[in-house]
Length: 115
Image 1: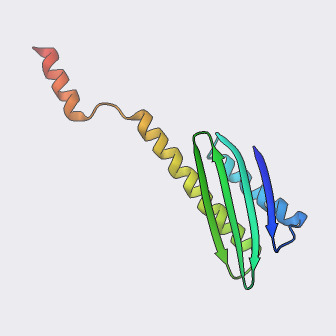
Image 2: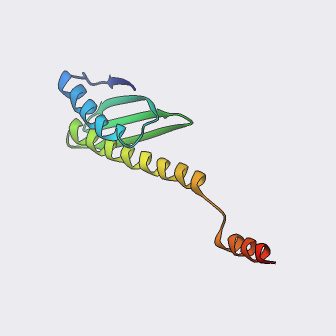
Image 3: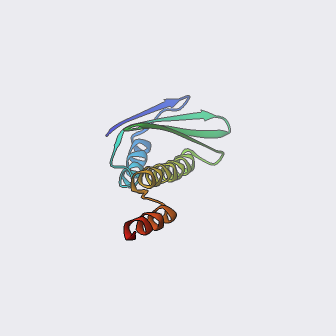
């Protein structure tokens, strides 16, 4: 997985990079098909903004969070949103593939087999 972290009006320190990487490890457990993630951190006083673009096989996700407190809080909120979006995408993809015949069709097929 490729990780790119950029800062707009904000110097990205090594501590911030480590915090983003640590949070992203938790998220990568939910998405085995995660190809790359681009994180953009910006400072528009007094708000701190964190955005993430996640590229999965077959899907691109974009999440953002704006916090007034500090950059770490914005990163935490953004990672929680990304985690929920990845779980939702994973559930949708499993539901489509795992869908079988509806119960009514199975009952009709059983009746036709008995005749």
